[in-house]
Length: 282
Ligand code: SF4
Image (cartoon, rainbow, N blue to C red; front, side, top):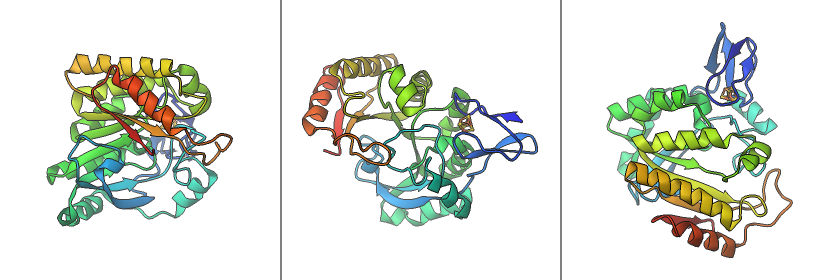
């Protein structure tokens, strides 16, 4: 039995067992990432798709995903690689890619506008060792590195990777403990601490997906944007906020897509405090 220290769950995992995220196991008494180098998707995406609008706009980035997630968002858009039953089966059959092979693929696509590597699609930090090893190598070759994360990781994990990451998009999925706890199976406190620290080191943009009836009040957006403003003031930099529209999918099909007028209204509310606010999926 060994304890995983990657996120707030601190899973106790038996030898050969699997942690809550489906990505970590125990081998010879040590917790290791069983998804190391296992690739679920590899694509050359526009940087704006991460979404990052204020980091090398107009460029492309080689985006790589693996398997597993430490949250349980019922509306997950990537459930086939995150936390559905299929994800486990799919992960077993996936091929492994080494950091060296990934960096070579990134270098080979530079002539198509690629600036580097983005770790994305599933939650990259449940397998942070692959992110770290690949990012170290990528930086040695002059590539840019991007992390797209739910921010649910200990600061010790952030500390291991942050010197090698140029930009992050981090979810702030809502701004109440209840929503994080009961709907997402997460910890708002851990996400807030992660973001506050990440902003000190690299370019950060944030994303909030608006779910009807869950996190769509003006009051909550005022609190969220007020907190972001405080971080901006502390660090002397703007933090772009992406407010995006929900569509029913996976286990959350009991409600309609977010009314676009609601998304625009919440963006107006956020702009009362913040300079850079984008709307998405509208
Ligand atoms: S990263 Fe995975 S195994 Fe580790 S504590 Fe979090 S959910 Fe558990």
